[in-house]
Length: 124
Image 1 (tube, rainbow, N blue to C red):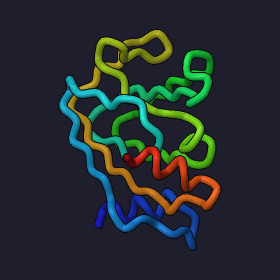
Image 2: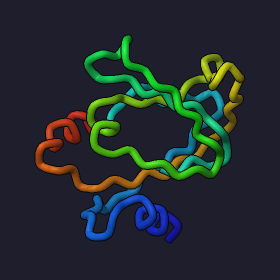
Image 3: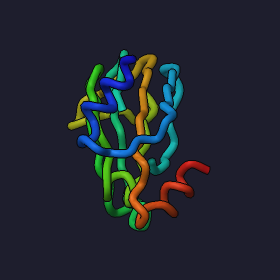
Image 4: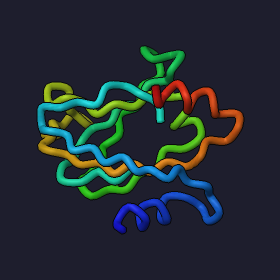
């Protein structure tokens, strides 16, 4: 399966994976609100990361080009929320990034013991 190749490319050998895979099909008007926890298909998008405790001070915007593969781990996964911006907010480096329909495939590894509470909070 396609997502098995994604998972194998995203995690080091010997990583224990969760058995389920999330596939999101997001309409161009749809947004993904901030959360903590992918392949980005069909459309470019801007993803915003905010520190969970300093959400108005520590903000990073990232361009996710169409067909990109990215991995969030450790601090990025547990210390920051991430969201996909609406078309009204979707700018990167001063340029408008129009977002159309977007499909994401999300594979997750089993959290390390020290991150188990954060993983439980983000899935609920």
